[in-house]
Length: 368
Image (tube, rainbow, N blue to C red; front, side, top):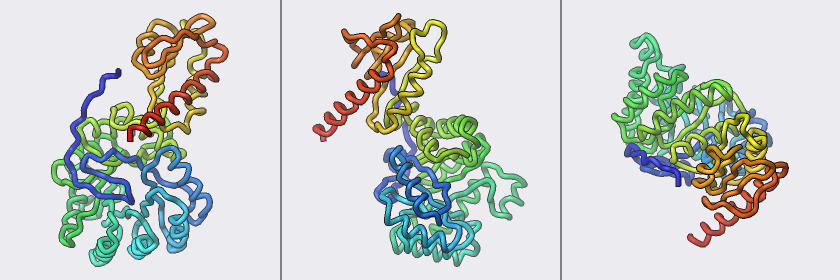
């Protein structure tokens, strides 16, 4: 068994985005955002479906124009995953999004305009029982706050968030979550740490505009995991300049590494050296791609030699330890009599993993 560290999560209120619970120790939900033109209805629907297949709990859709709002109305009827309407500047689009079935709104009250317009959004959301995310971003702080602090700082982000929270409170609206994002990892971490001590609302965490697939994954992993280990964070998005599907995968990888949530195959694989008895890198890459459809959590160790292979195989659900021509196969920590021919490892491991996933699914079904 792998050693699991218990993380004491910050106590927070609970809201619901559609049927997805957020806060109050609910599973940390993973979000992503479509990057298609919302007016391209079919393409947007297909992307949402693909995001849901890889495990996205919530999907955000941008609505920059009235035409996009009309498209959103059609899209919402064709998908089952909860949708967040992303609104900036025009409060009327927020009202339309609620009317057309949005499960949540994401707004930055600072760029919506005067308080009257923001209050219209809040009152309509309250009437329809729709939550709101107050999204504060270091790149779009209110002018007076930016003038006061000279530059985006953790204190500036928190001040902006608290200003908006106080206004929501005056309207007796508490169905909201908050984010204080920055592309600066340390700035974001510090802002969330300060805010977490001042409010009880759920926190949406992430490093905004983190970058491309590789660099963005590194920055997001550092920032998000730093917060999660402190117990901060109820829902998250990994913001990458890449296919949104990768955002969901990275999000689950972060949660799996911290033993906070698990989905799909967790591969334990060696970085390889001259002792490897088969092509470990190709084997893992191919299996990861082939087994993306499996959501059942399974630990699979694939090690190229006996140095660490036996030890890892004994703690994994399924394990493979490299040896000359034939490699040893372990199931539930027990070495099996039948070895796997190195030339056929990918095909045989895929079959064994799928069989195990099916067995575990059936076991979980009967436990319900």
